[in-house]
Amino acid sequence: MKIIVVGAGAFGGWVALMLQRKGHQVQLLDGHGPANARASSGDESRVIRALYKDEIYTRMTLQSMQLWEENEILFGEKYFYRTGVFNFIGRDESRWLAAKSHLNKWHVGYEELDNAALISRFPMLSTKGIQYSVLEEGGGYLRARAGCEAVVAQFVLEGGQYLQKNVKALQQLPTTLSEIELEDGSNLEADAFVFAAGPWLSQILPQVLEGVIRPSKQDLFYFGLPSHFTFKQHIPVWCDFATLEEDVMYYGIPAIDQATAGFGFKVGKDVAGPDFDPEHGERIIDLKNLENARHFMEQRFPFMKRAPLVQARVCQYENTLDAHLIIDTIPGLENVWVAGGGSGHGYKLGAAVGHYLANRIEGSLAEEPLFLLNRLSKPLDGDQRR
Image 1: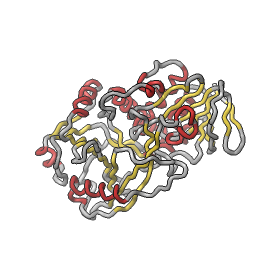
Image 2 (image 1 turned 90 degrees about the horizontal axis):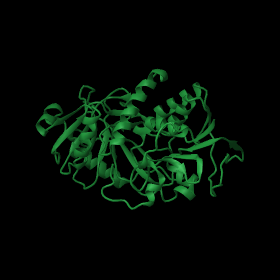
Image 3 (image 1 turned 90 degrees about the vertical axis):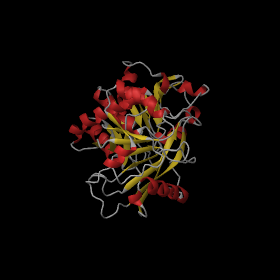
Image 4 (image 1 turned 135 degrees about the horizontal axis):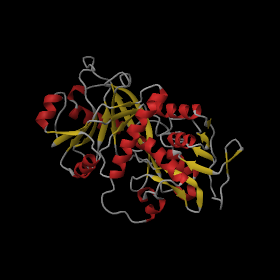
């Protein structure tokens, strides 16, 4: 079967590679290149952790970890670093308590530390607001931009065709889709189509996804480490659920080894920002966000006080109403698939999404109701945070 995949990011690259391995004739398209500076996958690193309140994401993260390690042998380079992931738990324990049973079920190693144990091991941290901490032993981070490039390179090496081409928006959906038009005026034919264009999805498929996927601007900050800091002062990747701001989770990837040393101490905020246009939006950080990130960092990591900002990045989330993925066909077009709605946590799931969607297209795997489009027409109840 001839299949066109639009978007060479965290989802599209892996989908294309998995479909190619199943013997299909696959063309992969991206307007600006895999993990380009406009893409949601365009930063240097992304957290990968299995601690989720939804069991399906725990399972998919573990599958992604396995796929990354298996494919690193083919890539000839390392992209997944198991540094461990600290989760700082505050007054609200509900997310951790929901996730704990999933980690136990899937035999994910973790360690619970009270504040005394935390400080004895990591005296450079402040425990302000922390009740206790959970160290997920097998988690860590992925090299995001480089990882996307490696997946696409492997796809081409295994016989796939990559084209750096922009797809024109489908303003009116046909009753059947057998070809797509490119912005250069040419057309490409296929038997099936996968749209995995991240924050561009609502622009490419406005009839279906406008208002369903909302891109938001996300500022990321890299601060310079003190000159006396060494790799021996190891701090794992961290997710802070104990901040004093309600419903805010800061996260970060310290420059703890040679893979991240040149980038700085990364700090991000896991809250959807303002609406953002991925194609034309200016990549200019909000100075208030910088002030807030620095204030948080200096409270939790006192050794970083007065650390200079050395880099800043603007990426975007592509948010769904309930923060869950969309992996489904377009209603009425059974040969047209959408894979998106990463909502700030999609990169870690990319390899598993590729496996899932390749098997769904072949009909060898049952659908997951949580990923279907029609769920978003129903009222949402309760806490939808992942």
